[in-house]
Image 1: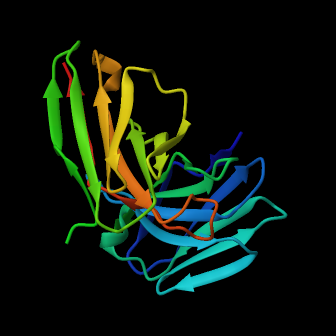
Image 2: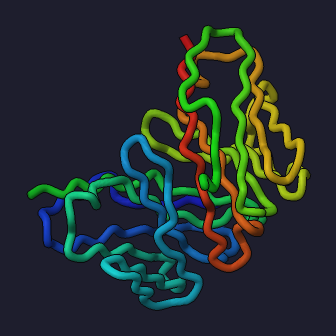
Length: 110
Length: 116
């Protein structure tokens, strides 16, 4: 089956850089996605990596190493509004639904 | 316009009751999903529907039944509600199955179900 591990909590201050790691075990691999969820809100898509390397989208970047079954989400120039839960996710073996990690709660303080 | 909508947003009910949650997407997507998020924020797939065909059912009790009258709607009906069913239920949609490229999933706002 599919399983993902990510830290449960990360804290940082405004303006800092934080990296949220995700390791996965899968039977077959399509790609690694990242979702953001604010308290009381819905998960929203941040990024997707199917190939090794770094993908940059504004202040957020996502990295994948398929050989290490590892990826990370990099958040730069942190803002208070970045305080949220961040989930890594991979498709299930059949490619019919996403399997999510347990989420990392990021707290940004001033 | 709201891409994925769910009703109701909050649902409080007694054990043993039957309830339904409605979901609609106006994105023209082919696949819709139901996820359950528990109090520890663990997000778990329950069902997905592709062109009105159920394609997965992840060990969900048969008290839960998805119903899709058309491609834009996937409703969730729950019979004989139990305390452990209390959670936030999210509907989502995507253009194709998640194995196809990046295939972003769009989530509805969620329905917070409380069973007393």
